[in-house]
Each structure stands twice: as structure tokens, then as C-alpha cells.
Image (tube, rainbow, N blue to C red; front, top):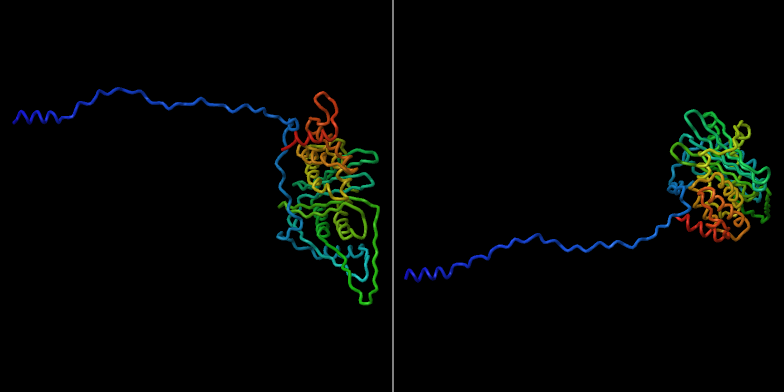
Amino acid sequence: MRALAFVAIAACAPAPAPPQVALGPVCPRVEPRREPPAVERHESACWKRGRPHAAPPKKPAVDDEDAYCASLDPAEVARVEARVRKEFSITSKPSKLVIDFGCLRASGTPASVVLEDGSGHGGSLRLVRFTRTPMGVDVRSIASSHYYNPGVVYGSGHLAIADFESLVAHAVVPLVARPHLVTLTNPSGIGGGSFSMSSNDFHLLLRVVDDHGDLTERAFTGYDGSSSQGRVIPLRIAAEGFRHVLDTMPLTKENAPTDDDKLFFTQRFVEAMTHANDPFFWWVKERYVSLAVTLGTIDAVPALVAVAQKGGEASADRTRPVALAAVAAITGWDPRVDERGHPRTLDDAAALAAKECAL
């Protein structure tokens, strides 16, 4: 019995494990990396000297309904009302002249003033900036003549802070004056009206900026006349103090622009081109583009290229080649000629500029 039991137990014992075979590490199969096909990178000829900076922040709306509006000096309000009533031509009877006032945004300490003026028939355009510093107010003028003795004169001057603040105080109230004529009904049915128009074609802009960056501005380009007097009269009153100072201040004359002149001009140029389609702005645009050949920086190039694309009427056709000349002067690359120095057509040069100077 014991022998049988031993045999049974032996029969039930597990079979010995097979010998272990050492295996090496198992590595996943790696496919060879396939490089994407090489793409030829086109280096723009337009931006060899650098690219434009980011677009400047959009200026706040001058008549923003949500803006904080500063209180107005009652003595200045009375002075402006009296001047407007004296100079305003009543072209419709019976009627009532109403003088409202808009929002004065630049209510802080005056930091800078920009004045632009020019004559359409006189061939002039002047850009002036008054910049407050701890030592006073620096005045810098860019005065250009485009018909008679053509050229540009750069002028420098200095103004006391007290005088500058007085000029601003007399300017901001007329800047926001809004006179308009209300025509009344005559029970008798008898009434009359008139209309006047002057040949004086002019441009005038005045901008006041405070130490918070808020601004109050007014501008006009066009002809004197009864229909425009509500905009023109207050603007002229606002600008007259600054224009008088410029007429009487001894400015140091220079024949070459500074880097600050170019920066200031380009800022004004880019903003001015937003008005390029205004019906009376064409001659201001022409003079701005002409000045860009000497004064424009790389930030002016996109606006110049846009000007070069638009033709079809006399002023635009005159301005397109000048805009391309400015692009060439600023970038060092001339879209008007090919690699062999042969001239391109105006349309081909403009199209190439749009392609190479795309952002």
C-alpha cells in the first residue's frame, strides 16, 4: 500500500519548469524620419531695412458719448459766444443762431499741441508741434512750399509754460463750440435766404492733448462759405493764438530734418491718409505724399503703397508715382525698375509694391 501511495504521489508531482532563456530588450521599430519638402522662403525686398512697427493705438473718438467732459470756463464761453455771433453770417430769415458746446476731453495738464495749416491755391502746408518739457515748451515747425520757391524749412523755438497754458485755455472752448442756424417758420410766409462761397481753399487742424493722453481736436479742409462757417469760425478762433505766436516768434531755421521730425511727420501722415478720400482733401494728400519722400519712415510705407494703388482721377494719378518714389527712398528698394534697371509701368510697379510690402 505504501509503495502504491508513493507512486501515486510521484505521478501527481508537477513537471520541472523548462530552463529560462535570457531575452534581450525588446525595442520598438522606429520608422526613419521623413523631412518635409524644402520650401523656398521669399525674403521681401521691401523690408530689408526693417519692418513697420505695430499699428499705433486707435485714437479715442473726439465726440465719444461715454467720455468724461470737463467743465468750461464761463468767461471763455461768453467770449467765444460773442465772437461767433459777431462773425457768423445770418443767411436765412427768420432764424435763430444757437451756439452749443461739445465735450472737452483734454481736461488735464496740457502736454502737447499740434497745428496744421495750409493753402490750396497758395501751395503751402505747415505742420507744427508744441511739446511740454520740464524746462518749458519746445516748438518745432515743418513749413513746406510746393508752388512758389518750393522747398521745406524746419524751425525751432521755445515757449514759456505759462504762455503755453494761456494759449491752450483760450483754444479749448472754441474747439468744442458748435454754432448752427435754426430756420424758423414765418407765419406771414415771407422769408428769405442767401448763400455765399469763397475761393479761399484752406486746411486747418488743431489738436490739444493732456498729460493723460486725452485729446480735443478740430479740423477743416475746404472753402470758406456760409455752409461751412459753423465749423470754420470756432476753429479759427481756437487756432489764432498759436498762429500769432508762430508769426511773431523768432524760429531758428534749419535745412535738414531731425529724427524726431521724421517720427512726428510719419505719425501725422499715417493719420492724414485716413481722410484721403474726403472730396476737398486731395491737395493736402498730394503735399503729404511729396513730403514723405524726405520725411517718411518705414511706418509710412503701408499707407504709401495704398496710395500707389488708387488711380483714375487727376490728383490720384499725379500722386501714385510720387508715392512709389517715397517707397524707394525709405526702403532702399525701387519697385519702378526691374533687376536690369529697365523701368516698369506704373501699374506693374504699384502691383509689385503691394506684393513685396505686404505685411
